[in-house]
Length: 75
Image 1 (cartoon, one colour):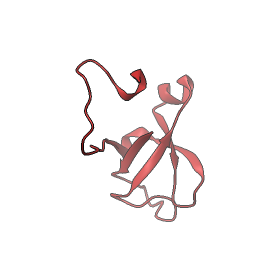
Image 2 (cartoon, rainbow, N blue to C red):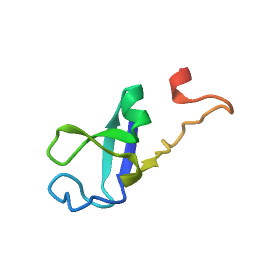
Image 3 (cartoon, rainbow, N blue to C red):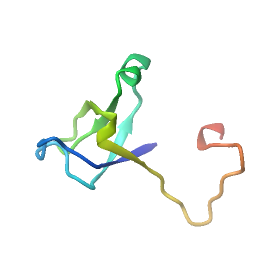
Image 4 (tube, rainbow, N blue to C red):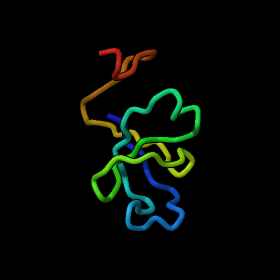
């Protein structure tokens, strides 16, 4: 599962909160090429937002590890 931190909300306070962490859902190739990311927002709905409004977030689970050259999708 991918998460993103909101760095900008262009006055969309009802939908996005600065510094809040949001779940990012898969996007199509066209959406990615358009610079958009699909986010589950404060209203619990998924919408497309400009990807430059967000920064990726990674969580480290204690006791977990990642082998060099692998990702969680490899498992």
